[in-house]
Image (tube, rainbow, N blue to C red):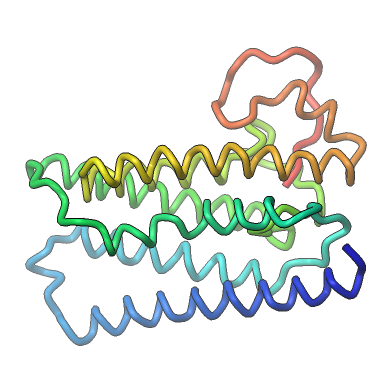
Length: 227
């Protein structure tokens, strides 16, 4: 992809992500103000909404401030996979009504969603200006959770997804969860292809740091982490 196309794609990506983020945050805030029904729905529900706003707001910030790419993926598939992995669960709004589960299960689901949102916001803060939805190489990240697993953001997002599946449990949400995880695995592979091409140190790093499950035994010495 030429530099001109990279610039156009980057600008369009920033506009799209930030527009979506602003719309979602504004909708949540407006619903809070107009309905006023959060006391009846519980403190945990309110915390979950605040955590969601925190995550979406952080995504908007790092998107606006991210640095230019030094390398991008080839072909259309990596971009379609990234979009699918990011926005697939929006389809949950069009699924049949979920099964009725005990309140304790729904409460546990909301706790998982809160943990997923907050930890994902933290991962975005660690990534900072190197964040990207589509596969692209911007900079190496060598701090914190990226020295434990190569894709901690996807790990924390899956915690949220598991919570969402439990909260709106049905065969359809389970199916969406399976498809989502397959997309994310493919997305990780696409990203690593770009990172290996852009950063020579990435290969040795990948040999000694697990992909997504922490503390798996790996061969080789500890190397620097990447974004």
